[in-house]
Amino acid sequence: MTADATPSSPLLQTPLHALHLELGARMVPFAGYAMPVQYPAGIIAEHRQCRDSAALFDVSHMGQLRLVGPDSAAALETLVPQDVLDLPAGKQRYAFFTNAAGGLLDDLMITRRADDLFLVVNAGCKDADTRHLVTEIGHRCQIVPMPDHALLALQGPKAVDALARINGGVAALTFMSGGHFALAGADCFVTRSGYTGEDGFEISVPATHAIALARTLLAQPEVGAAGLGARDTLRLEAGLCLYGHDIDTATTPVEAGLTWAMQKVRRPGGARAGGYTGQDALGAQLTQGATTRRIGLTGLERTPVREGAPLVDGHGHPVGRVTSGTVGPSVGQPIAMGYVAADHAGIGSELFAEVRGKRVPMRVTAMPFAPHRYFRG
Amino acid sequence: MSLKFTADHEWINADDTAAAVVGITVHAQDALGDVVFVDLPAVGTSFAQGDVAGVVESVKAAADVYAPLSGEVTEVNEALRDDPSLANTDPLGAGWFFKMKLSDPSQLDALMDTTAYDALTQG
Image (tube, rainbow over all chains, first blue to last red; front, side, top):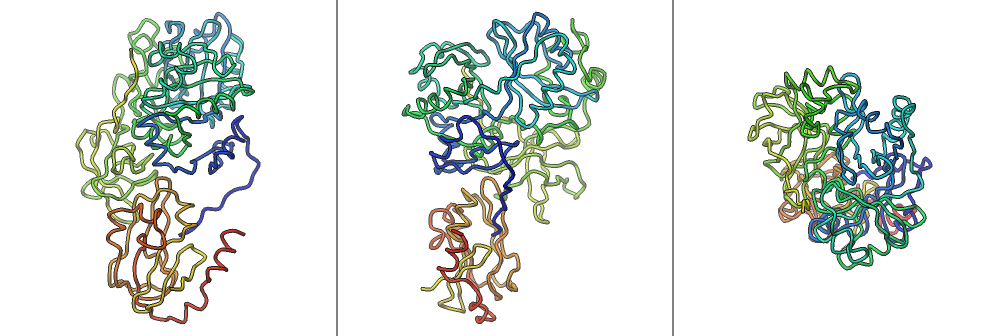
């Protein structure tokens, strides 16, 4: 047993910091912030809280930005291979910033609101994303970071019961849509989306009202606090990528299996094909296919397989590597994501992960590992 | 029963030096979080003090388990293999890892007693 050393460099705090401490959270450094990895209940209990009822996550470390101006959608389309122009008001879309090689700079959520585009980006990328936006499209629209807003995620099959008790209007939202709602005395922007595979909401709340709203939510009988540890096991079971692990600048959306998120209108042959950074590389890969693919893996033994584990075939030849792995608390077995050569990516293929010098058998498995339960109306 | 502790957060109960019981401490399981997997040594394996004798994995992390003293493994806790959460719920009891026949019981003298270990983990 070796205890981890804890670095003591100064960390940023979210508006909910005092509440985390009050709730007994174990705080860890994450993307420059002190964040709760778990509360006293523990990761598995918090994971189940989300799958069975509703869990409240502080995700205020993530970047929130507004793009303002009549040209903002067209401008943003130069940086993402998504259809932003045709995104209806009140609708949300998953997107990614690409580089010239088609690699992924970050993944993000875009919501078209009445007066702006509302972006949520990863914590670890938000400074670079903001610079990227300002540099590339700052002359076409206003880029307005929102450090004065916290972000709460209320996730789980009973999230709607809890949140609708506070403002009944949220029940009318469907998956990947959003609107303004008064919650705990504040004007909040609520989307019906998340990162757990469950129905649920993400709530952009003025930082001044974040603790009051969190307390109100935690007072609902369905709701318990959950930390980043459970968020990670939930998203992995849901087959969702974690930026910096499952996707990064060295992986493309085609390799990552994210082409579903590139609308036809932006693909080769579409009415607004190309016109974004990396269009040549991605266009070619869309046509020809990728030589490596992101896959899901299920462990055939009990050994957890973690990020970085080499993947080999039955003869011991290297075929890829694991990018995320854990024991899925809901699926009850080791699960992982990784990249392998395309000819090993078929569902049902058997591969081996090398763990501490031993070969652990794994099977390529369709994702999600746990079924999505989004509310589509 | 007298427990001794290592700086690597294992405990050992050597009331019977032919079958000294080894596990991880309350502090260790708390730091790890929910334990989901243990890799236990094979019975009959001999270890020198400080050798890696097993692995304990939580949802978040993997950690080595070291042989707190030199000796030969005489028994492993199959119940722990089946239900690794015993390391969380009863780390000093049903969550034991393995038993060793100590080859040099005098090594015990250099391990920490409860008072010294508590000072280490609370200091």
